[in-house]
Length: 405
Image (cartoon, rainbow, N blue to C red):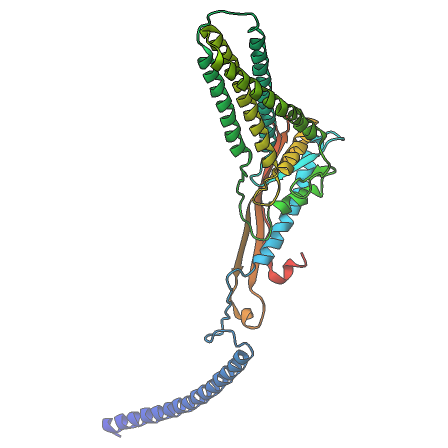
């Protein structure tokens, strides 16, 4: 066999080898085709199962099998409030332990919340108004005594007097007007319903904090929840202090008016200029007494009417004065003011998205907390005896775990 024959035989061998490899490749292609068909069938089965699962959970969005959670506005707020409330109760226990030794056994804590502070404005204004009325009646009595004394000097006296009655009466009228103006301005303050505003919270508030602390103290008083209803003897005494002079002033005004008219008549008939001036001076003195007594009566009448005026909550002013006085009296004998404020509630949530969401496991977590403070104040001096601040929050819980915590 020549060279050409050998080359032909080699090419024939390679051709046979390539044909054999082709058969192998074709066999592998058949296997891959079968695998593809099987994979497509499997995918079709998965898609069919997915469609079935979506039919069971119609609220889930379509798409990949990754799960989805939709949280409405305010979702978890109730659970966050419960967790925050538990934090408040725990802190209340610690506050009670910290302050329990600050009052004597016969005394107690008086609880105030939020921005509320015991300034006793109505009680103080009431006493100031009583004092103003007493001063007004005392001044009128002094003027009456001066008028009576001047009257007695007229018998058998004939002198030329320097004209000064008008100036003196002008001073008296000015004083009476100033006293009346003082009463009006004091009355406007007296009837003002002072309010101070507090932070608005969801679920828990200053009242909840106050009750939580009160439940852990041996002795406490929370005026926002209860006030004594017994009549106050000191208030009755103060009112009688001005009611007595007021009753007496009725006859005094009548007598002073008659005397003023009588001496004015004498002055009109008197020819002697010296005596005329004396008669006019006495008449003016009694007119001043009438003006002073009338101004004092008006102060008392304004007070009496104002005591029955109700504030925006329907509470009469007299009741508010009695409440403030009751608190003031207790602070003066050793009770301590406990000032509590819940500054802000804390609530937060988060969600987790994964395949388990799709199968119904709740991926919603919530936690709650608070920031609050307290101060214990000595009632008569205003000294702060103890204070504390707290800012705490819980761990994250699943919603269904909150109720069992």
